[in-house]
Image 1: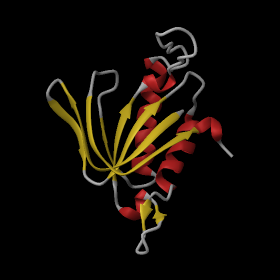
Image 2: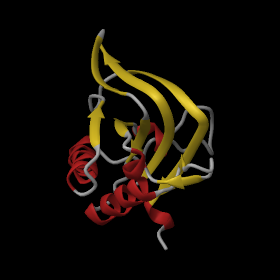
Image 3: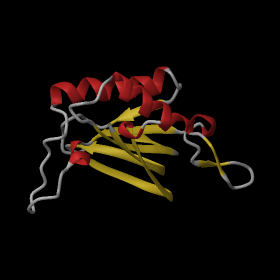
Length: 150
């Protein structure tokens, strides 16, 4: 599982002209899943996302988590995070999980952020062509991968 975290001041996802999810201060999460991912990976990455200290404290140091900050999540499924560009000019997506596996894991990830960490989670639409708009805060962009577990 691979998640790109972008700290944002505001963000939204639009599908066919309709806003499907919008947040104020928080994270935009671009979520990629591979065919090897499990619920253990989902829990690990959700914990990392919730507990990473990417928000400033009173002294201006990145010392607070999104939970402490009171931020929101905009979660967007993105199979292209598993693009393999080593050969040729057309990326291969063979490592990305098939929709029947990826959708339930993405939903479990979003639910884990809500139920375990009390975060407000808005989403894009799985498998849809989406327009994602955000104001990157910092900019702060971090990549978390479940295969990099301690």
